[in-house]
Length: 306
Length: 262
Image 1 (cartoon, helix red, strand yellow):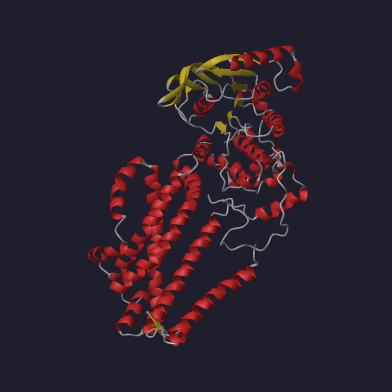
Image 2 (tube, each protein chain N blue to C red):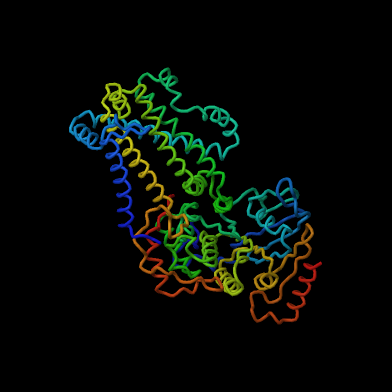
């Protein structure tokens, strides 16, 4: 049932290898069966173009430009989205004041805001960051709002009866409790951000991976176009994995089953069979070694956010 | 924060015990959620340091009574007083122990016990020492670094007890804290409660649906039913396991069961 981590990585690598192999075969044989691969660059063409690009300076400028734009936009969206989400969920006044405006703007695709960005901001750069930020803002806002509304009321009541005020409740209950939901929004947000930063660069950018990809297309440099796509794919994967890992790290307190489908399993546990649930449902008389083992594995989690 | 109860070795100062508890008074009070009163005309006087148990059928307003005392619900009519002053809202002086899991799941047991200390401004190093000492008193030293969902229900309630008592409150309000535990664990918890309360001098209001629990723990038992306080009775031989066969106690138990049944 549970495969060893090594076998799982081998499987993942094989999946990518088969995909690339299929691409290479279809393009090098110029297959034309309704889908036309004859115009497609082969994997080796793309790899050669990629190697050329890596040695030139422009590629790295594009990369840092795109990354700066998305990270700035995304960070702004995370802060604004969480703040607005908490505000709307916790305050009726804020909900009445902000709610309608946000709901009207929300359905507009962020990329459709390009004209607005051009009118609003003195430079293209700020416009692209604005569009990226708007794109990620709404998923973060909506999931924060839901997460805050779904908090168990007892947690807040407990802190209130300890004499905790609004700030304490915000810091010790609302934010940590909503964190799992917030990270759901951040994961969606980083994906949408990439779509929008690349599109915005294609439309109005100077430098940037999206801009370069479109440039290559206009001068019929197809391998170049594919280099751009591969770059976008890798960057997107790396950034969303980073968000995912950070989220998992900050929400380690969530009760999880030992087998996470699709998740990264840790090294197999030394004692695979935990103590059977006692008939009287009272594991308080656990044996000493078991308690010790639990303590060893769990002590590392002894950290709280606030 | 300068009382003698601050020292680490003895978190509770027995010397000042008698003066520590609060006096909680209801005078013809109406209790309930703003649009749904459940208890009318409540007259109750809980004296400092007393353990008052509250029994009644489910839905009779036991939890409402407790939440009003905690300051989470405002009284709908009449007066509610703490030491002669009107009860206006929650306070660290009146700790509440909940029936269900009220520990913050992202904090370890130690982190949970430290929270009330952090709120009242106890320095970090002292916080940890006091939390550890309270966890030791409820027998959770080994689990201090565990997250709440990794320990049993009984251990969670013990941690809640430690959290409630950590900042030396003057009153502890307990809402069926052992209601979800099995009979054996429950009687162990009752003994533990008596043990840790000894010397704190705190006023206790303990809500339960278990008549035997109420009779074991309470100096007095308040009976709730049909929207009001039916009776408040003195308990002979409180917190004495041997007093179960005491004829006066047996008679009281029968009385209470009869009036709950009707």
